[in-house]
Image (cartoon, rainbow, N blue to C red; front, side, top):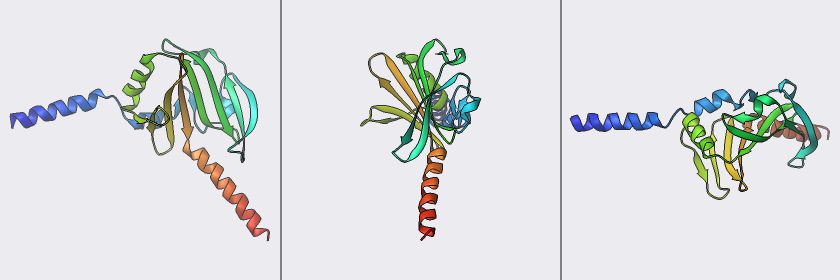
Length: 170
């Protein structure tokens, strides 16, 4: 009985030391006060970089953000923040930072242990509505990429609607 209690306590201590879980990622739903799915006009310091077609189909816009509140994550310098939007709603947040091991430790403490994609050499945390990818970008940079499944689903539905409209036009 004492051994079972000891193992149970060790198990709970170990599981709690891994930090929170993916519900925290779901709750935050983005980077700082920039949330996936929000309208681009509500972001401070955004500038249109270019318009393009996502997957050669969907009209999208790429914005860069420059504002003092996004210059650092703790002591880690943020080098660049970009957003992709579809119908003025953010579906990707790309954050490039200086290389610092504390960033990965902070992500693990917030969201728990990550999965690893060996092919792309990327750590990731995945929920039902978004994915956060974390990887090295060259020798001196790290990339955090937040991607919204909901906006991608909207893109697919819009494409399907166009196909249905064409089919109904016969």
